[in-house]
Image (cartoon, rainbow, N blue to C red; front, side, top):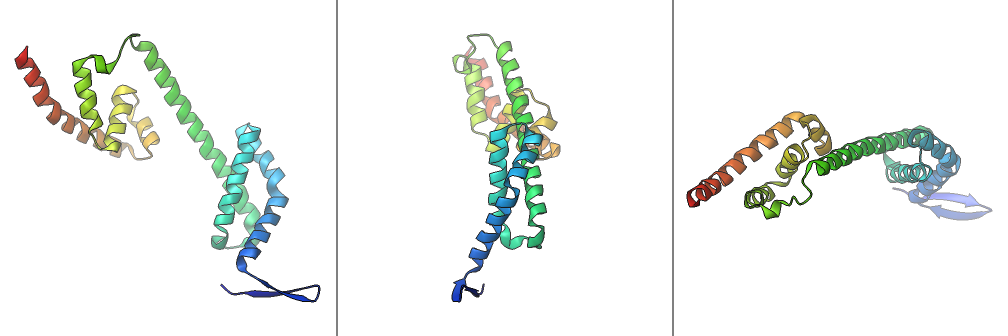
Length: 190
């Protein structure tokens, strides 16, 4: 990156490309902040969240400034970033609402005094589940504890349905191997 010489009021100033980027992004901010906040508000419906998403988009634009092919079209890049951030936030809200709704419904079905640690079998199963790899553990909990369909688990874990099926299959095999000996030993003790 080279140094650019600018003449201002007869004084020669040395400018760095970072200064150019900061100036360009500041101008972009001044021109677009209010309209982008309105755009995000219309999509999201929350003033504070809209402002937060616009600021995130400006930060992303600032960070990616060197990769923008046509700085003259930076307005379009920034607008697209705001829209994409809004869409992502909406998807997250929908997923969170589903998970919260499912969790709430699950709580209603449980007896009030239910605690897996109170029951030896439950304790052993939970102990085995906790030993699973993190992704397998998440898949097992979402499928069998939260009772979610594989498609929703794939969305939550950000993977394909095939990956969810594979992770569940591996987890079941490992749990079966670990718990089979435990339960046969308990049966012999009784």
